[in-house]
Amino acid sequence: MPKRIYFISDVHLGVPHGKRTPDEHQDALISFLRHIEADSSLYIVGDLFDFWFEYRSSVPTSGARVVFELYGLVQRGIPVSILPGNHDIWLGRYLSNEVGLELLPSPTDLTLHGKRVHLTHGDEFNPSLSFTVSRAILKSPLCIRLFRLLHPDIGVWLGRLTSGASDAKARVHPRDDRRVYESAADRLIQNGTDIVVCGHYHHGIELDIYDGKLIVLGNWLRSDTYGLMEDGEIRLMRWKGDRGETVTGPLTE
Picture 1 (cartoon, rainbow, N blue to C red):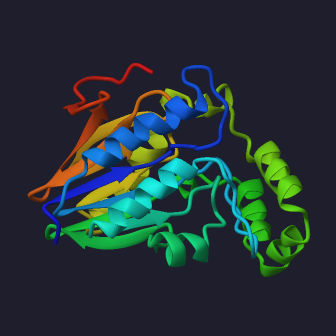
Picture 2: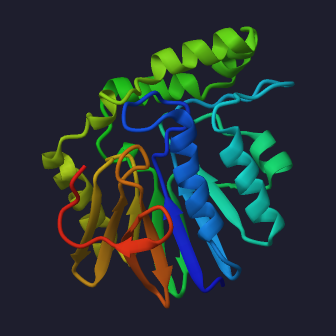
């Protein structure tokens, strides 16, 4: 088991936003990835991409430098696992076969440092009927085959258009919605989970619940937050460009 386990989510590579240029957006994450040393592992907990679809002979180019950096981590012997989010539900074999990422379902349950960890993007914690129906349609083999009939440029444009992400829409989760995540974690911890790690909410949370803990990872659009697990203990951190700092108090985003 690696000594240090890192968790990130909601990078949304490819989304336009006002704080940083696309290159600066990638640079921030790349500087963090280069900080990860040997005897570590990384879990990407959904929405690395704002949209992702693998055609038979092409993939989206947004975030390519980050993908290369992830390949470099794997080549250095650092395991990298990725879960789908609601923006990149179509993760596929290019990322596993060519980049070397381990594709995990969301949610997934793991034992890390002797702790039972429930790892999930988090979008399923408060699903609406429309969300449930649209997710079933998008994941159907028929929908995937039909989407592959589109020219990749059209498919990527359409995917970004319908993904619902932009700098304005990246704040669609009001802070008072945190009760949804707290309630879900409460149920899981009462049923034997030690740690719940999720994303989607875009606001970082570190909260003790009974004898367990909830970590909501925040985002890499504005806050650059991540989770770090060492010696069975996990905490929420913020990347400051050349180092990580423990998050204390409410996040200002």
